[in-house]
Length: 420
Image (cartoon, rainbow, N blue to C red; front, side, top):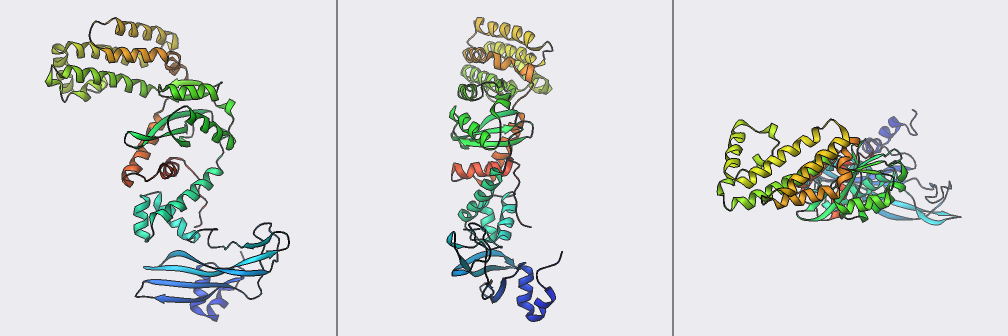
């Protein structure tokens, strides 16, 4: 492709300025007007200017050949010149358009309102995908607040171009911003394994906001046929109100998780009279097929002496068979009814397990729907692991806004249009 300038002529005219012209990929009317190199201050300042009498397109309406009204002095941080920080300076023209009035033109090396060049932003974005924003700031010598603004800009631009028209199966889960508080709800496309939407809170209003975001990105509410989630009444209420045609599957992982929580409550209660149960928690919660010979022998001994835990464990082992049933939802319905009945009729003090059985009844159809849909939140659990790992590396985030931006950055599979 023919260049709008002659590289050899630039270098012959002034070798160093010509080199900077080429390195910065400047095109007329822009040129390098001068530079100042301070080796002691480890800094290079490059002055850019436009040709005298140059005219520019109106940044509002695009009208060509507008005269320069006046100029504004601007500075941008650029990629380092070897180990030295580099800065670009320019008097940026404001054009006078007969239709639009006076407006500041866009420069080709930086986006409007940014303190950095496009190439510097591309470098920091690449770094922030692999390391905490604060660590990136220390390496490049910029405050992390400025870098968060860059990250938010590119995440917002990339999300604005997202197309959700093909979304049919959605997983819903929550993740914590801080321990025990500030929850964020994630909505993921189960077919593309990506976060579609993240929003503060974990009540039914999160589903309302997801619906609005889905439609804003070309998604069709009536086309979403499946949701999978935990047994949260808030999420079920939201989906029932906003996605009336969608079926809901209670995620298998969360059912097992609630059963394990009931088991652990029973263990802690019986541990008061049987102190030797201390330290056995994970053996009780493991799937029976994953136990080591030593763990199995220890559990057998505990079951002989601790009658309550023994009975609770028998019921847990029976429930493991639920997910292996081959007869579909009808067989699962009969199995679950029989299992819950045995729990309720037990004379042993296994109240947490009875509460769990009550929860199953409230979610009966949604639990059984797993045998039809066979979908779960495994993808969201994997995404949550990625998000939590990023949070641990960063040692947390100052705001939920930043946390959500990093979720999109980490698990949104966004396409960032960055210069190379």
